[in-house]
Image (tube, rainbow, N blue to C red; front, side):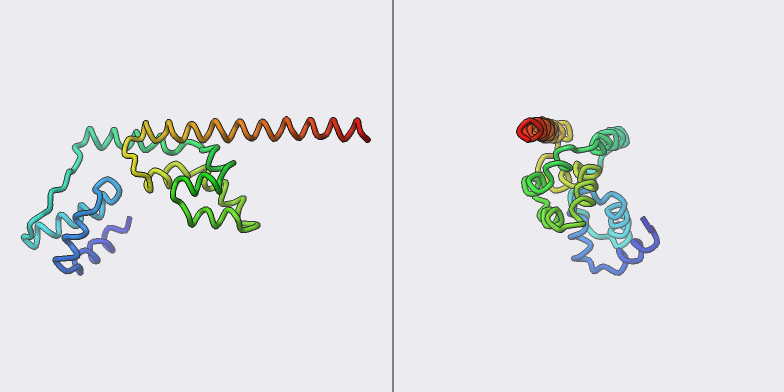
Length: 161
């Protein structure tokens, strides 16, 4: 984050816009919210109730967010269905564009957990990852079913002639 840039932008905000900024979720906008708190204090504005996690909670949150960095087979192999169910409609469109769809599927496999978690109403990473684990299981099952069907199809075509 370019701290000087954001400090300048926060200073340029009117009081009402600064108050709106302070109502955003602290965990996803931590650096910007910290700058906004500093600016609001400098102006002597009343701060809305902000739950700022302590250092232990912050470390735990970082460890939990690392869990989101796991590869997501559901997002990779079932991309159109997975993106729709996780409210990532823009990504759904990309999965249908030839030439872009493979790159989108790879990106979703790598970063899909984070994208979906940020859009999700679920705030417990453990619970969220259990749900994503179900997607992974179904994606692997469908992959194996496709492999077995292909092998059976090859045998049938080789025998039939």
